[in-house]
Image (tube, rainbow, N blue to C red; front, side):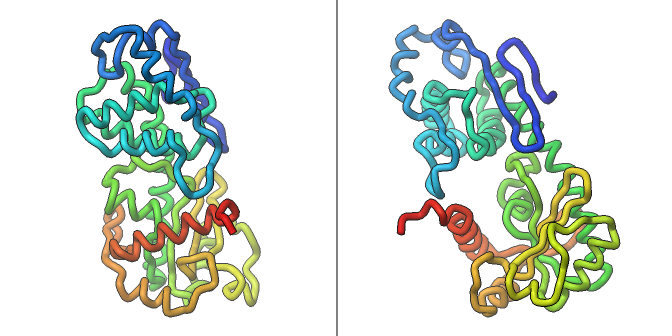
Length: 287
């Protein structure tokens, strides 16, 4: 287990990483998160945020609690401390959802740079280390497959989290990932699929004629913990081919662990992430 101590226990599963922090009321009333003592009524002050218990995914908008966590993970100084306190006191940590959990490694990185209470950071560090170690398997597998694809002359472009870990987070543990996404030209799909199969990867569906017209990607797993989604279209929705052509035209070079590949430029990256978020949660969108 990444962390186990008097304050709590981390449990790992194949579907999610469950965090259970057992913190007594007395200890919550006894100190700030940065280690300074304060009066017991501080607990009452933050109890008004008890409504921020984090539910499961609430559409594509963050919950109130997730907004606080984002602020705590990005802001500096007293603003970060205040947001962290508000989130901490208003959150039922035994019912934390996976979407919120994925923000905690970024929170740890931000607070660890600002001399926060080591005891509190120790709890966050366990989640960060879980994220970092999990990503090592993914990135190692991704690097190997990028090399195999390039050896066969297949052009590659990294999408979403794998690209952001390099060009935005610049930290392999700050963003937990379930898979890696690679975009290839549609005329090279059959070559790429053969390479994956040759290297022992198992597809989520059998490739057949006409698949390119009804799907935008194909998922492969290595039989262990790694998964790579092979895209021939960047977006899941049916879009004109000019969209992907524009993505490729505006692509920039990316060095991924010594392998030269490409990724979307900053503007296209933002556009793609927004589209992906809307697609993932479109069932929750008002009609």
